[in-house]
Structure formats: C-alpha cells, structure tokens
Length: 141
Image (cartoon, rainbow, N blue to C red; front, side):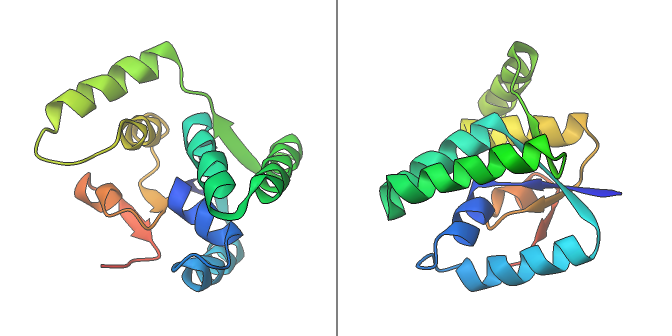
C-alpha cells in the first residue's frame, strides 16, 4: 500500500468550494484514492485545518470535517500521527536549521513524520514539501 501525507492545504481545499485549489484537490483526491494511496496526516495538520475552515467557511463545516476525520480514523481509512515530544524536538531542530526557508513549525513536524514513516509523497499545495525533497501531488508551480 502506498502512503501519502496529507497537508493542511489539501484538506482545506477539499472542503472549501471557494478555495482556489478546490477543483485540483478534488481531482487529485480521486486519482490518489483510485491509485490505492493510504492517507496519513497529523494532529497538528488537523488543528491547522479546523482553524482554517472555521475562519474561511464557518464553525459548522469545521465540525462536520472533524467528525468525518474521526469516522475515517475509526474505520482505519486514514491514520493520524500524534506529535510527540520527540517529534517536537526533531521538528524544532529543522525549524532552527532552515533559516533560509520559511517553513512553518507545522511543516517541520510534517517533514519529521514523513521521514520517520519513510513517506516521500505529500498531498499538498505547499511548495515547502518539494523544497525539502518530497514529491508533491498535485504538482503545481
């Protein structure tokens, strides 16, 4: 089974029809699922996504999305990695090291999760995943 890390931008675009990447995210989601990818995300990414949805389209949709995630996780359709103290330390080291990039701290936690789980692909619209050396779906410049 191929694993792919799902980032905030992908989750948000899938759930917000007004997002500029909505159509691309829907098409990519369909393709990735048809190709047998298993989605992995983190609690930090979900935190960002819930907040973004709350601000962009409202509390109701943020809660609906959260409930969908809970159900998918219970059914083992996705995996949610919880950021541990060890991962925070590893991410902080990346955050300090890459002064020339504008990686967010959450980006750094995602990179460490991906490295630790040997995942080299991300469902994301964030160029930082490519800058760090991962393959990004859908590919956008």
